[in-house]
Length: 636
Image 1 (cartoon, rainbow, N blue to C red):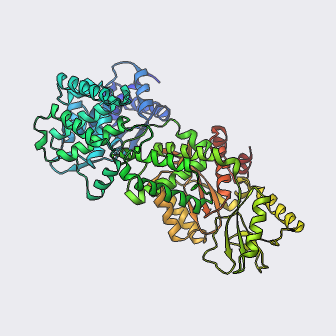
Image 2: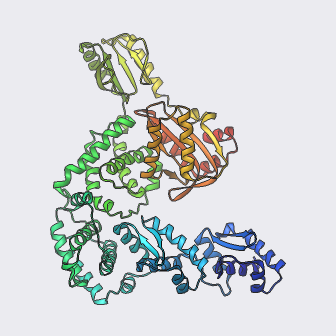
Image 3: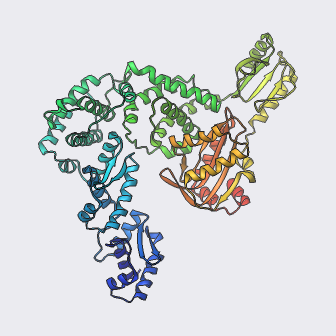
């Protein structure tokens, strides 16, 4: 692009008015209005690939909107010349965010003057700041005659400050900006080093840096009159999260805070501040002795959470993990150790999330069940990255038990259980691949579970299916004909239905109309309800789960799903206009609704993830122009 075209971009990016007319551009560039229009068009041609958009507003002029900060920054940097400060560069964004966080109220005009921007340019900048804050659970509000304000839970505000204040600045520099002296910073380091050595704690430089960030932000907020407040429910959860060494840790942290705030003991929220900082400390350092409970008094609480989740998995997915003691103890240990992190909304970095989803899709969905139990009991949401760590425990269990997978069966009989007991004994000794999970009276409908592969009956029945599963009539003596019938049943069940088999024309659609995530989900679930595929309660479950965990599962792909009472089905939708889904844009939506206890779920999920984890196959699916082409791309 020519120098004049680059000048158009810079002029619009740093405009002093909301709109810039072609007359104004021609004056700034010292060219005719027609030439200015030509340079605008030249800039528009390269805008999409370089992270910005120029719009013409009839009768008002032109505006420039940055769509990709990184691309736009490179574009301007490569353009050379007397480039002006970029309103949406990452560096300036963080500086504006830091200034807003520093003051309780700040006017937009004051921000514009501080950074030498027009009011409209600063307005666009604060819109980017609002998106940044939202990712930390913080809202950027506005009050008449007061200006911009930061709103949200104090824990969320402090998390946001730790990210913003220390972005692009060293620890000492950022602490100095918060009016902390070199002596105080050095004293804090020495105190921590001494306590760590005295108590033989496992400490890394990274964990020490993390704790110091939260310590300095805590001091800054206390000095500014902003205190931590725990509501009644949170108090009991905090107690569960604290370790058995918390009393000793609290004493140390009290003395540490007193280095910065001499009259800290008289602070209004001193007790809660120490509790908050203790949680931060225990999430930064490993304070437990190997083999000991994090907090023995709260162990039943965490055991109940894990037990409930394993029972839910068995009920919904037909997979019994309740007897895996290694899995149970591992999950209890992990959840109890990380509970303080969950409580304080601390983000977890996890480079294994994509791999966990790709290689162990069932494990990832089992981890969602655990997160739902935690949400129901505590109101705490678990991040996607943390779900990735939890799924590794389930993946390990799958690895241990995969070779021992069995077909789940219920034996039905009359009220006398003698014949069923004999048949059960013979099956157990002759068929390792069959797991008889229960023996029920055939007329006891309420007790007969649906989370099995098939049913065996010792008495003739009129219907040869129950709860959508086949019913096989066998003699309690398991004769040769019975063994042949049983072998035929097992062979039939081993023939797994493929994704291609279930992708019928009515399960596929290309959506041309641009729409938002909620609007799209409403449209699809309403259609399912009208067709009798979902109940109103099951539709709501889709939205409840999506609110808990955003279901983007791979690049460009999301898979919302729920457990239903009707037959399982999966629908595919190509979105011609990408939809923002959580923190990513998606172009392929896979909607899975699975019958409770359907044993095919695990196999179908594995097939799905094998497809969507391959970028080449994903690109082919998204570019499909019709059903037949999509089906062919599924088979590749």
